[in-house]
Amino acid sequence: MLAQAFPLARRWLNVMLTRPLTLREAVIVGAVLLVAGTIYCQIYCLLALQQMHGASMPLWASVHRASVDVVPAFAAFELGKRVPPQPRWWHWLALVIFFAATIALAVLWRLQLHKMDMALSPRRIAVDRLPFMGFAALGIAYYHARLRQKRAEQRCGDLSEIMPPVNAIDWVKAAGNYVEIKVGDRTRLLRMTLRQAAEMLPEVGFVQIHRSVIVNRARIARMNGRQRVRMTDGTEFSVGDAYRSNLKGA
Image 1 (cartoon, rainbow, N blue to C red):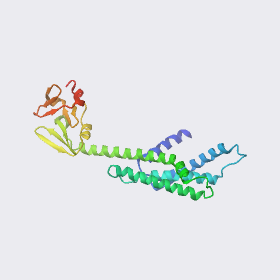
Image 2 (cartoon, rainbow, N blue to C red):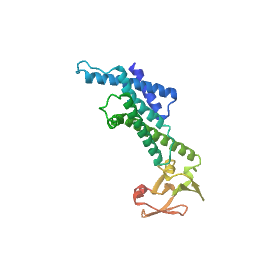
Image 3 (cartoon, one colour):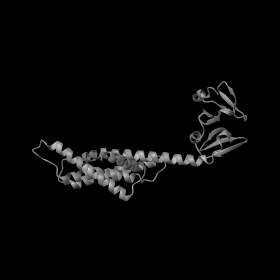
Image 4 (tube, rainbow, N blue to C red):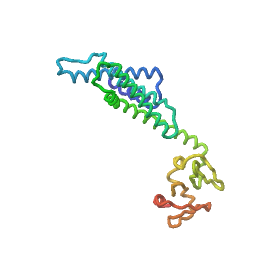
């Protein structure tokens, strides 16, 4: 039974961390989390109240507590995956605002469910929600990191289709949001970063000699005391201090 449960749980976890759930999937996962939270509350209260003359927490109270703990965090996690990507820090600011609003709603929900319990302040209730929201925030951060990596890989795949054959490249030089690629007697200008270009070049045949220049080792005609290199096409480049060790054996 357990041998079948672990692979199933791992598969569902992978689905949750790689794509938004459908409504049916979200309802199933939410129900499972709610049941698990209720069971946890019952066990916790049983252990904590066993010395209080047989006191116990009613099942409905455990369901309410679990719902306040689990449902807002899961909703924040799932809806956070649907926040459209924004330029730079706007995306993360939108997620922070979204999670802050979710915590506020969770506090209001908790106050409505337990109006008679005046011992807990809104601040204490918000703090109690932070561990669950923290797990949801970590999940969202992992999801969006995977999403950015996947999109970067797709961009690299698209760029590789227009990249010249690597054995024909003399050198690659950064030029703002573009790179200059020297192939024979022509210089091609492609919209990509130097890092993206480096990922498509074999490490054995190419070496970075400057923060903005990568050269083909086979096209190096002469080196001037590791300060400058002259390529077979006559182009000369300065060698950056941090990259001189890359030229060992060249």
